[in-house]
Length: 338
Ligand SMILES: [Mn+2]
Image (cartoon, rainbow, N blue to C red):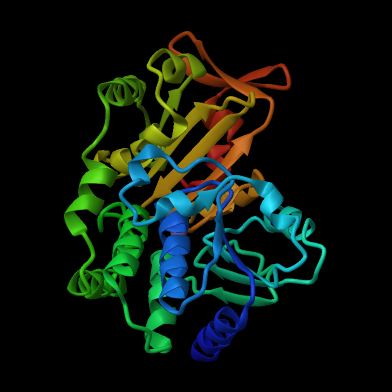
């Protein structure tokens, strides 16, 4: 089935007159790298495609070849000649629907992903949950179709793979991830650029914010959970973007002596975003209960109309006029055994 779908997507891509590639609504190294790899694949075949991103591409990704072709202009979808929309690394059906709706014609939607929570919203779905990254799904697509893997394609895919495996350190890292990376390096991926850009370029301000989060780490040893928080004040005083602090959960997950880790941070929109990472628990369960999603070992959700407050040295969630310590607010004891 996987091979058939790879071939079907190949036919659709090469037959399309006006294909548009779409990154996840929350842009990251994997959704962007995968979309850009496909852009280069199409380019090799003499086809131009547009690449839509819901937010501007962060500075750190400017090393990706031709990444400037990405556009945040949603009006590109007001075009009845669009006949194919390929979405990468995105589980949010509503986001995709909002884009597809704008097209007057009847484009085919191809959904390429690896998230367990992907609802299979496409006309064609290639959701491979055993893949460590969508970049690996794209790599498997290229191999299945005997495509020539160029330097540009390799660099884009390696960026995706390195991002999702946190540089081959998290539990998504398996032999396939390492095997794929090795193939990509053989095909000329700019490995040093990828590593440097993704992991070695934290600004002093970003590290100060990490420092605040480190100081507030709270241990719940009976359930092997740790939590920490970041407020808007932390983020805004240090002028760091949400994107810059994204790596914090991954970093803590790598170094903290716990099974499961929650990083809570206040969002611009007046909610609290919760990122969960675990070595042993399926955190996608708690994420789905709170309306989020993700993978077994890395998931997230947002508490709407909520903020974080410190009460007698305990960080609490204030929501619907109730102030509860994080462990109570998120009902940890229902999800994690003692
Ligand atoms: Mn991914």
